[in-house]
Length: 61
Image (cartoon, rainbow, N blue to C red; front, side, top):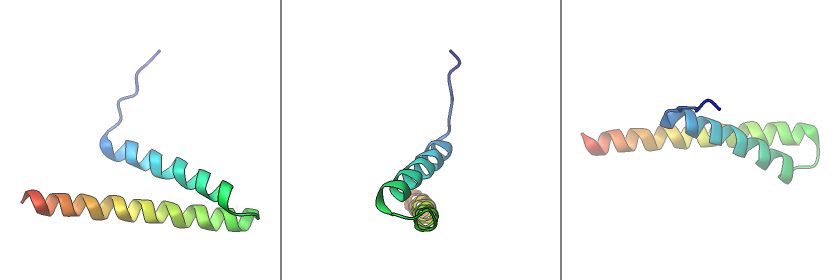
């Protein structure tokens, strides 16, 4: 079985994608609400990912 070598960003991106899909599916009732909430969660995950990356970069100098 081939191994997957993911960078930290790729792994975080996939986590954000899958977590957003799950959150959208289990928390909303209609398909439109699920899609909008999933996209909102995905955007929030990515914003947090980039925000924390910049904080770590600034912290290391």
